[in-house]
Image (cartoon, rainbow, N blue to C red; front, side, top):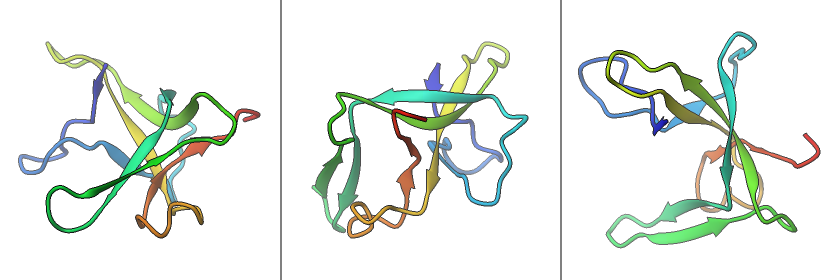
Length: 104
């Protein structure tokens, strides 16, 4: 699969992160995106400061995602769901990926 949904219109780039609030995903193609960490960046000039977030006590995590079928000669694609940040991420960014706890 390729990371990022195709843009909805002629302008814009791939959709890597998809807002989850207020949406229903019951009929969507849901998936889990395995990751050892995710990153947030701060600063306005290159190089930006890079902040790494992991799930305490776990070697990897699952990020909630959506996927779409292949179209024509393009492969299937996926994107990650985002939500409001938790208290650990909020000082660095106003959004974060949806991390599922191992029991979920």
